[in-house]
Image 1 (cartoon, helix red, strand yellow):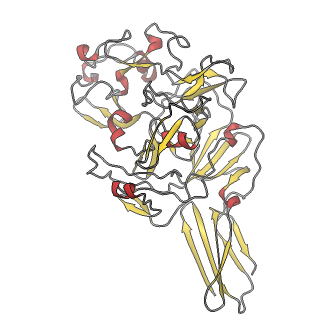
Image 2 (image 1 turned 60 degrees about the horizontal axis):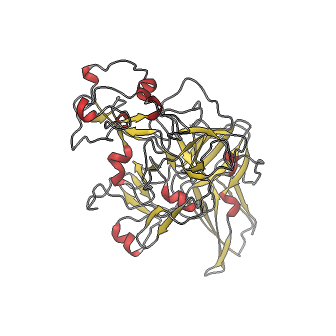
Image 3 (image 1 turned 90 degrees about the horizontal axis):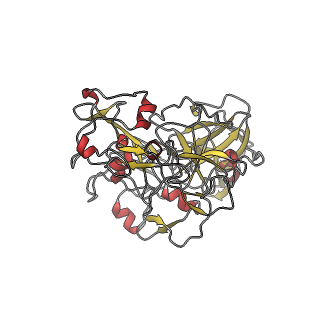
Length: 450
């Protein structure tokens, strides 16, 4: 008898080989986990909106531009901390729910071909890491609580996109410390898209060590969800469609506070589902002297916009030690998120001059919430480029009760498991041996009776 178990990170491929001579039974126990089943709660977008169409496919990436040119994607890789020595299934593997929570289990890897990643325009310097399976279990509240006391978004995952990829906020973890841009929670926080966009792949994502994530417009996911995006397969490029029929954007992500993040397109009148559809207009503008803003090139970075004063509880003049760097070629407009002003603080009116509030959200009706909901929207400009604050502002609208958990410690109903799509295959080999191969979710017990 031969028995081989090949672990595939968040999921496993199990290969059993046995001879027809004398073997009666094989039992494989693979830890403890969710029971595989399909029971979808009726009409709950938090359960039903997860993109599981490609969850039974291996994650793939282009290691470099040479691979990309010839369309050679790999399912195993090794670069920096990003080591994937065996293939792993892409995206969301399990969705379950209790009365209060939605749980997902994900590899954190997209099902479109990821990569390549470089640190320079010429694409000669490789990004320091590839992504890898994060084996993440994350929960999101089913009943959001909108609070008057807002919480900052924080670093790391602040929610998850419906394809199982992490949502990061609009910063890159560097801030001005009075002398240079360094690590830490400063008040002049670098804008991730402006400063790190060069390192994003065609899907508009990159990784922190192994954690693949989006800071801005997740354009490849939008293509998968038919959200007004076209794909140039020859050049591995996504772009806004000028011909696609206009429809309301789908839900792209769920934030830690339990509120949805939609793509750019919504109803022009927030409470009228019969009104025209169009891209939502961000409520932010650069502080360059236009639109009633201060001109930071003249005043220097010596004051915070009102939204930041509220978020940081820092009303009043800044101390000299809290000033940011002057506007220069190396510290141009937009380098820091505090270079942006909120139009609502400049005499402009939401719903007339712009659509989205300082949190990049509004209260509105949507196809999934015909009675109304608070919702975030992806912000893009007229040319289809990401627009600040991108996916979500620097604070949550609701109470961010969700987050990563080590395990599911309550009774849940499984709405989806990739195990439901598994197909066993048997192959005859030499010496009267048959191999049975299938993939299965983390956890559970499996019995084979030959």
